[in-house]
Image (cartoon, rainbow, N blue to C red; front, side, top):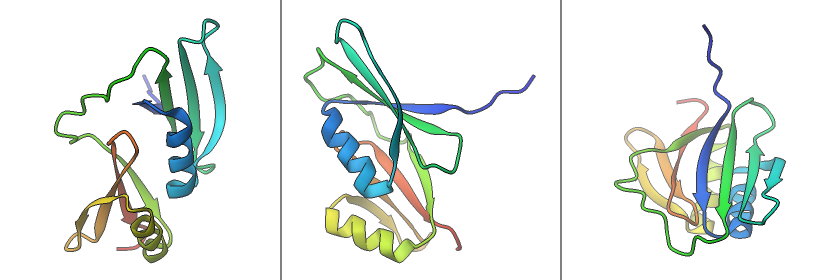
Length: 123
């Protein structure tokens, strides 16, 4: 039996704001969308163009309060080929929420409070 990782889901309050963030901060592109016939939800799948794994952003029409993320110990990690340029971009965007200089990595926070780990390709 073999399982293949397909996507990770993040629920978002403002789909456009989230799409803009993921495009600017991580270069992710929309590869597939699905809208409920009654407009109650929309799914947008994002890809980095190089791996099969995608991020699914789910927007729910009737949701108007922030999602409870607990201690936010769950996260998605990204390896970046130019760590210094990524750090500069994320500093400019004001989205770095935690930095571990000893381990040589940092986290950014998306508009809904999800943490995303940024790791240099070479450590």
